Length: 195
Image 1: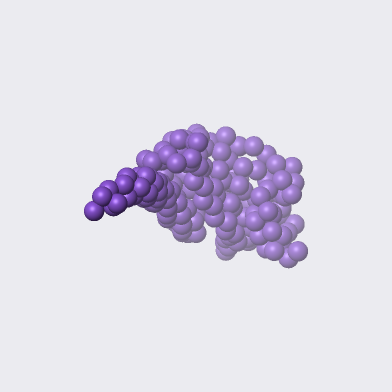
Image 2: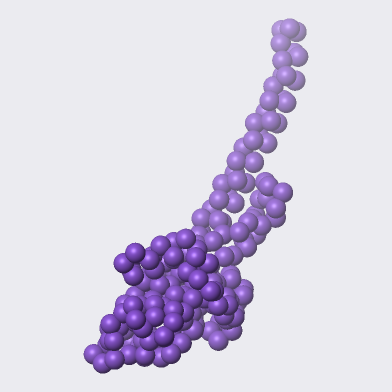
């Protein structure tokens, strides 16, 4: 019996190491759950915003107005905030010039991005929080029975809303060319314009 006395001490470091690995794994899974939940909420908010922009009643002021980008950006940020997402929102907007579309149409390409910093419950990396971002791109070609206002030159730019900012609190930055947009938006615009 005396020869087994020392073996219990050899198992203790292994048990401690196993417990440490288990705790780190559980912490990692808890962090992943927080990030996954934030990502799912963002994507749901962006889907709701896209649906609102496609709703004829809500987007009518954009279709007939001369600043469709600002109208859509405010509509998008309202929908995102209504879904409980408080992070920064960017709305990339491109409108084709009058010569590219029929007199009764307008053509828009809209890119939406939400970015939030989420505090992690079990920090296993050097950073105490992580960035979660989601985006969507859509295009629209609203039709009207009569001639609608269209810009003489294309409109390119981005409306940025800081954390928690709502409609009317965005900042617009013009972009001189479509190449200054994120790749997905530029590709969508080129596809809609036929090359």
